Image (cartoon, rainbow, N blue to C red):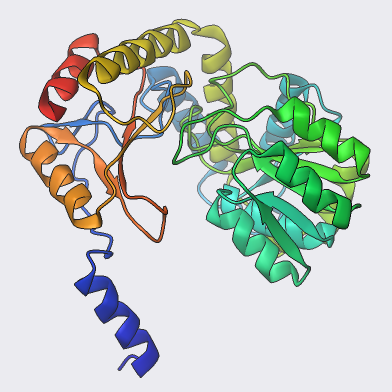
Length: 360
């Protein structure tokens, strides 16, 4: 039996349309899920996860290396495939070193705790960053979304902090001026962490930051997360990040598959070119229709504000009935409920126009 406090919370979620519903995915080609729904909820922005080249790399590696890693990376779970992946990402991001984590959540939770500093962060940062700040036990404060002036006000009172932002925000789809935040970090002797979950593979690899966190389940279509930075930072994190040291490492075939995905991303540039055209098309058609887009930035995340939780979920159901898999995002995940649409390279122009027609 749930404790009374938890039961009341669950009851309140039921009453206010806050419960998250789970839909079983029985088949997924990338573009089509469950044999009939066009998928507009995937983070596989470049459509790499279904690549035949990626599948072959995965198959070859698992045949050679088997399934699990059998241990923590600091014991016997650090495979040469992982080392190669870290080195390739450091080279790609033009940093000295990189470290491979089991997930973006593991990465953000762990590095924030390990660095053990006060925290100044964007109000809309991901839950993993918020939880890392809470669990660190250090003072943390949140500036208004992408508000450089407010961030500076907080840094004046909290110099020598961790300054944390995302490059593309996952629910807004807007782009942050990371150069301005690097300037602030330098001015107030702070360590800048930029979460580039939704920017990597979509935007140029030109971030100036002390640490860059890249969960690999978005444009790369992979698993795990990379944290890149200077040799001093990465060597320190490898020793003192508890979520890294005390988790069984991901197996070699995951590292090899991620590496293959990185090669595909670099070589098959048509994927990003096509995606950008689809984003421009969606923005133009949505504006003609008068839809309230959260952001006009050239990113795959196209959120439409609804405002009411019940109405957002009703629209989700209507779109699914018309053949589109689109999810409503409601409070408390976001302050204002919305329909979050993800555009991917596997979509066609007709897919986008049909979705716009359904929204009309």
